[in-house]
Length: 352
Ligand SMILES: Nc1nc2c(ncn2[C@@H]2O[C@H](COP(=O)(O)OP(=O)(O)OP(=O)(O)O)[C@@H](O)[C@H]2O)c(=O)[nH]1
Ligand SMILES: [Zn+2]
Image (cartoon, rainbow, N blue to C red; front, side):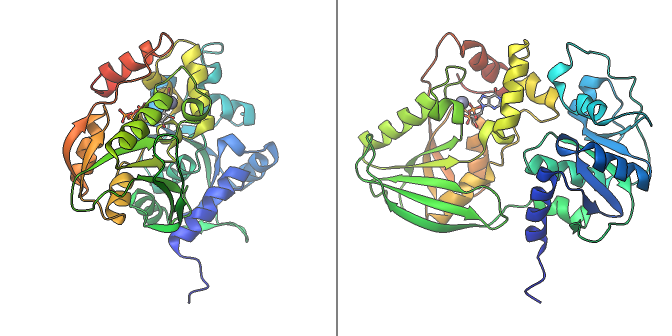
């Protein structure tokens, strides 16, 4: 029956539910995102059973809570804990000012699929990766998802469909086109800028650029993204051909709100990697398969890749795009981003 939502469609709904503060049902649990939880919803969830707080092992490490479940920890929520308590565990903003959140006691044994799926959904909704769960049957109206299949679907590669394209003369290259590609799973659209008319049977000068509102649009000095974007377009204009993929993976995939939380932690003295970890994220939450899928969809098989990140090269090779050459892209170094670039070199393996 085609009028019944598919799993990807239901996941897309669940993302919106979590963002507006609604719980979703996962394998006999109700799960809500801490970031959007209201006191009324917390009270209602409490009425149904014992509330558990799911956080990632990264956040648990910062809080000195034992993560018995590998990549996640199930924190017991004290009976008198309110929404502010949950937020303080989820959000590291005040870790330094109010250092002692615990001691936090965590569960071991039992099934963790619902907790893991709920955290993955919160991440994919670009919320803080912290969720409350209670074992209960869903009341009518809530989105219901199977935990295991949801996790598998979130980890799978979403198919991308081209939706629209037009000529777009650029300062760097008058003969340019912009194409919009839309993932089938309701995720963010991504853009492909094609410069000149690159032949499909030869390696193309290519750049996979991850969105950076602060650097690309505002000219922030905290990173090198803006200068990299413009240097790549200029090089392609000079070469007469190229393809720049603008991937909407803001903040290495954590979203702009979480990136600003990370920047606030950086103002408190943590580096870019530590800030992501304190928030409960990995250093890099991007899915690099995406760029390879877009290039394949556009008919390219081989690239001269403009990047300083060896992981991008490896991921292209692993997903069907031959990298015949890595073209370094070291521009935009300034006193504000020296430390950031040093951390990328020392901790993230960037060739700088
Ligand atoms: N989470 C987080 N994201 C950041 C930070 N600074 C920049 N970004 C994001 O990082 C992404 C760019 O990634 P980079 O690590 O600079 O570079 P790269 O894409 O891995 O490698 P290159 O191809 O060499 O540019 C963009 O999505 C930016 O929004 C930060 O401090 N924290
Ligand atoms: Zn940037």
